[in-house]
Image (cartoon, rainbow, N blue to C red; front, side, top):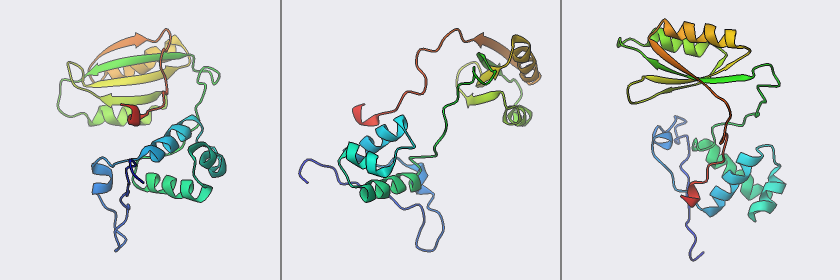
Length: 175
């Protein structure tokens, strides 16, 4: 065990059955095996534990237990399908910066959570309040979405020509 960091992940539930808030509020320590599991799952989240175990040098039950702990600790938040939005009829991707002058943002928040073409919305620092990523069926659809957001403040729309980095696996162990 010399040279290896021993990691004990906190349980997400206390003995009385209530959730521990601190589990998701503070960073947890991961060892090299945890990071190896995370790297593999980011590439193929449907990989069977037997295959994952072979790739990281553990048995299937050990990998399953570590994965369960990472899920309970909130490190793994879910498993998703990577969709080709262009093949689904949404060839346009744009970012819309939104600046809202008033302090009540509830109407804006309601709108972005109800519009399916808004795939990301980030509350940001700087001159703008929000950075919104939108997918659209057409320029007209993008225009309608931008106008809907403009009811809440000033908007600036940038159309994506191409994407250089998308969905990159995160490997905190190397940084």
